[in-house]
Amino acid sequence: MSRTGRRPGLSGTREDILVAARRGFGARGYQATTFRSIAEDVGVDPGLLVHYFGTKERLFVAALSITLRPSELFGDLGKVSASDAAELIVRRYLAMLDQDETRDMVLGLVRSAVSNERAAGMLGEFVAQVMRSSLSELINRSDAELRAALAVAHLIGIAMLRHVVKEGTIVHASDDELVSLVAPVIASYLQ
Amino acid sequence: MSRTGRRPGLSGTREDILVAARRGFGARGYQATTFRSIAEDVGVDPGLLVHYFGTKERLFVAALSITLRPSELFGDLGKVSASDAAELIVRRYLAMLDQDETRDMVLGLVRSAVSNERAAGMLGEFVAQVMRSSLSELINRSDAELRAALAVAHLIGIAMLRHVVKEGTIVHASDDELVSLVAPVIASYLQ
Image (cartoon, rainbow over all chains, first blue to last red; front, side):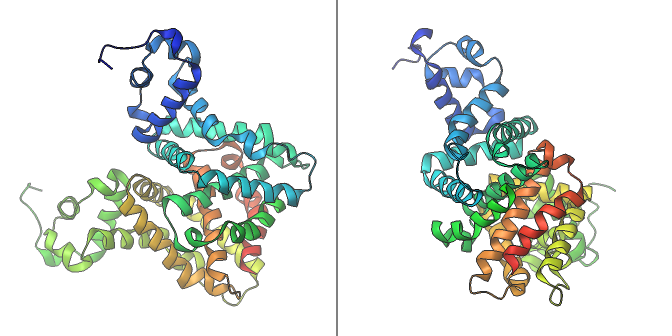
């Protein structure tokens, strides 16, 4: 494709932009990823990104949503016991992190958050949204949101040790071993 | 002090170098922090750093040790119950993170680890050392090391949400609220 071969705006879908944004934030970090660079990747006008997402912050949150997929993690758990829900959450989460593409993107997004206060704020807002919209709904307690936040903190810590720090025992543990130890802890926060 | 006013090697103590290293890794990250830059901060010859620490990796681990202070976190717990030990660990950890200087350094070191594979490996080794030397000793189980690693994962996740991502419910929770929910979870890993 020639360097001037941008496709016209109409062929660039919202989905294409999100996938390119996820790739950009993951590989280059929050700061270095601009509407212009993403628009260039997709081959659309930067104005289309403004039209769909308004700001880089909103685009970052949307890119997080297609990466962490809260509905896949926390969906369909309303009718099962706390211990079954906890086991499903831990299994789904480990399976999600086992996908190379998802893992790379999650790590890139966390990297962005750690190195940029604005990205950290967006990640915080996203985590809060995830909890409010899904996990805390499963908890019938006055401190449901704090319990949900702590469950999420545990899951984030496991991803940090398994995939960033690469701590040996957690890297080498099987999914079943992790589920058998972690699920009861998540269940204790849920009930 | 003039720019050529380096003090001779003998006046630069191991402690001064560690404090400067911690400051350097915290503020500039792992990659940008060199023996030369630290030696300049302290006013000693870079050869003295080689003499004391050998490599930048070893210096990084030593800087972690004076920052996270495993003996303060996990010391003197051999004779108390798992639930008392867990409560002490969570209280000590939250108190440690409440000190501005420690928190900034920990976040800087985590930032280094997230952005540099080598620093991540060192942090992983350090976490493993901390666990092997202290926390897993408290656990009388065949999977003591995995349990210890998961307890550490939870503590790291809480620091991420409280101080990096600044998730609202965890930021606003009191130490007592956090201890009352987190200590039983840490205790369940310890017993």
